[in-house]
Image (cartoon, rainbow, N blue to C red; front, side):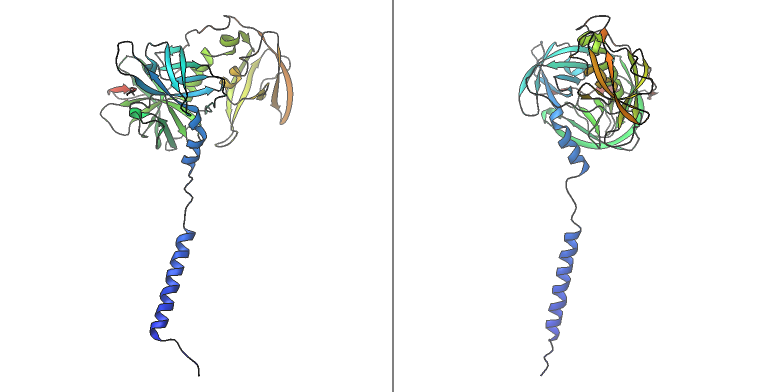
Length: 353
């Protein structure tokens, strides 16, 4: 005799099938939690430091943020973070605290260069080109607002080429406007693109407004670093090259240093410099820091791309004018920012601890 399931049994079977199907559908729709933002933060976290300053007036210790731009201990931050101090305390990502010396303080750019001495090799943050910045692209800010270390916020590029006047009277131009949350303690910290490249240094917010903050673009940062930390200033040597920067794409190895003018017989205008000695270079500052440990008269091997072929050429260094260890005032680059309407702006202050 053939047995048939009861109506209740059929309903149970159907219900069980729907539950199993729903579970399977839920499982197939699970999303990866390791987003591009997570990847970018993981990539750069060791390059971001906390800068602590004790004011001579006896006021409470204040804290801002800084960025490692060379693994040998060169940092960039805001001038208003360090104030008039020659010495600060730098806290690395691993918690180690080191004494830092303020070697450059540029009020008109609100940038400062800090040196630390350590035996460990630090992680430098890659400086991005600014010519291909896009309004609307995603950005990430990392800093220490109100003393909450390593705080991450996200937003977009709201506008480019902004110009503001700070309470000090200094005019900053070519700024990136963003709606990423910037608060006291974010000063001197990085504004990153989605690939974890530094596109700016967070500097100011509009007083009384929400979602309006500004960052000094990476081009200005490279300008100040290149002037104060050139091969001539640090090592007393001159490479005799004039170079420009070339953008190849949006991701990966996307920057090139291109020879514009040269006095060396082995190099030609249009050569793309890939490596200087053992250092891979992607921008003009990389070119300068690759020569910090060289001497006048030394010939350095350069790997270049010429007419589609990679070749090795020699560059003989000459003694530079001005000598090593001097830090001349950097001339401001030509600004092309759009003037903002009259408003009240404040430098992002350091957080009080």
